[in-house]
Amino acid sequence: MKVNVVKNMFVLVISVLFSAVAMASSMDSVSTKTGRNSNVDIRYTGANQDFYNFEVVVRQTGSRRMTLRILDEAGVELYRESFGKVGFSKAIKVVRNDYARLSFVVDSQNGQYKKAFKIQSEVLERINVLEEEINN
Image 1 (cartoon, rainbow, N blue to C red):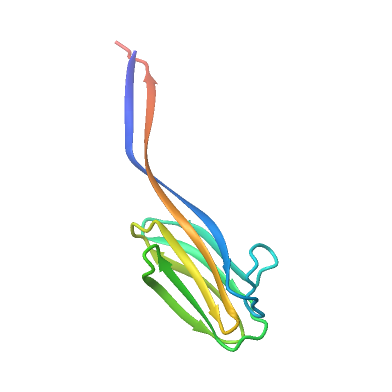
Image 2 (tube, rainbow, N blue to C red):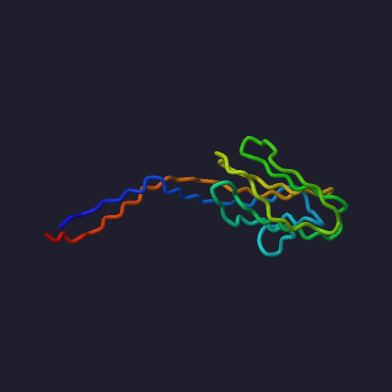
């Protein structure tokens, strides 16, 4: 009986954990609440070899101008976009890097909404052992 051992050393697993942090005073157009009643919905939708993918939806109810910013763990701004009264819905790709945390911040004249995503990458070892018959 012959046994083949196959090792795949570089199976990358990315887990993105998120913590929603509501900050600032009461906001008419950007709710500081997290969950279903919020006017802001920011979701991690997956990753590939090059990008982390997120979907951002902001439903506006009256503020004049709002700004979406994405910051890394050091506070470096990676993305900024302003939008008006209509609201905002967009799929956003963030180039993969060694980020430990990405923070999404929506600013309006009435306050601020923040949501953070903690990124943990792991390299796992996967071993496949296959049994094979030997015929002489």
